[in-house]
Amino acid sequence: WQADGTVYAQVNDARLDEIRRHVTVPKAMIAGHGNARIWLDFDTAAPTLAVPNEAMRASTPLRAITADVHLSGAKAKLGDDLEPLDISELSGRLEYRAADAGFTMASKGLALRTANGVKMAPADFSLTLKDQNDAARAGGEMTGNGIDLKVMTALLEFFPVGKDVRRVANDFSPRGSIQNTRYAWRGPLGSPTGYEFKGTLSGFSLNQFENLPGISGFT
Image: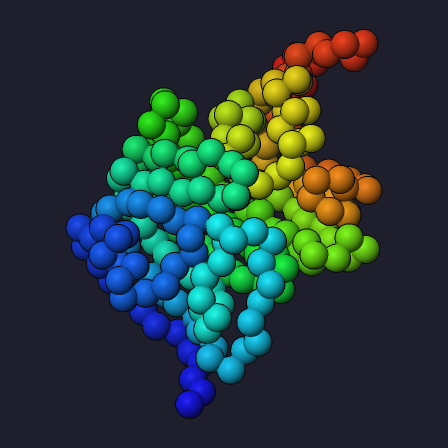
């Protein structure tokens, strides 16, 4: 038989391990409990999609997840070689959409506080990876609005953005906020061949690194 469509569910005071018994969710989502409204898009006739890493694999028919959540004690592991992200509190909208050898993860009005004290005010964020199994077509982009750069730098170690991006962020230690910003790259995640950046910076600062001067309070 074949079927496609959207399933809606509302859960209160639920635990992720209980939800996992009834619905297949990406392996990246490890734990959490709280309240959620969830929309699941599925298509049993669609072909099996390749994934850039096993942490992002869901089930064959599941194509997208949208969830309005208020969670506590959440944990996610967004890459095979990344540390788990422990979240004490999290609220806002989360979205995940599968693609062949890629995916899109996004948040809207997302606020969180990690177990080690990093606190993020409500913000919008997205990460898209495309064609990660084909170096000639691979690419990706990150977008952000209302993002605190100091907070984002602290969180980068938990996101699959590549070692080079994390190294540069740690060396320069950016501070300030970004609005309506898009960062895109061409090529494989670990060795991109080109970059593009567009957005608005406020109170932007960078550390001095090697022969490059620092920046303070640039808008």
